[in-house]
Length: 295
Ligand code: G1P
Image (cartoon, rainbow, N blue to C red; front, top):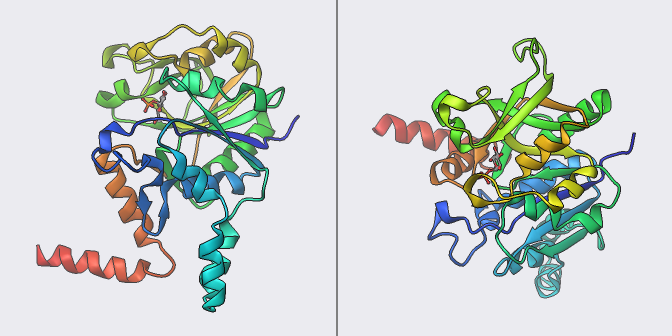
């Protein structure tokens, strides 16, 4: 079984649900406490053993590339001023040269199309997809948990979580195989999936969270995938086709997900990460309880 060392991070979206914040700043670069949201997703992937990152970007997203580059003037100034601790913390997060690729999605044709844009770098290797809108706070990184599951069952693995039934139409929704029970198992064989179903047509209340381990044969299907929900080329539709020839398992991860592409989800993420921050977490918790008691 080939190791999962490559990850695709689609970062081409406009971030329309958090405008005007995202008019001039990519949504992936919005700050969660003291770093861009995207840094948490990269950290999650590094913990899972990812060695090469493929960002599928678009016009106006240049700050993402700059963020992961070295910043000579800044680093030199920090060193000359003896700010060694800050310098070291910046360098510790800087990826090794040659481990990040940036590809432009030239037209906003949907998530499936964005993933397909990375096909040449993926080649014949299995790969992960992480949707950076979604942050997952957990003891062990969500993708690392999925890689462990992958070593057990192989094939394709999709992270899922329960969602209130009236919200299924906002997500991809999976259909577990008959007899499979999420209450007793964390890895469950799948029978189907559908993108943004009507509430009365959803096959379950298990939403696709935004973390995937996929086999390279998916790229061939994405090539001619017809537009689906919302008039976009959907990753879910191509995965549903691949399911006729390959195994798919849904994986119930340990952790809490936050949808940073929405105003409320973003605020929840800021609160959650601030409370657990090693430096300011304690003070943040005190501040929150004080302001709650003030009403
Ligand atoms: C995408 C996927 C969907 C998934 C969701 C998770 O939808 O197409 O299957 O459930 O991310 O956030 P989007 O939110 O981009 O519309």
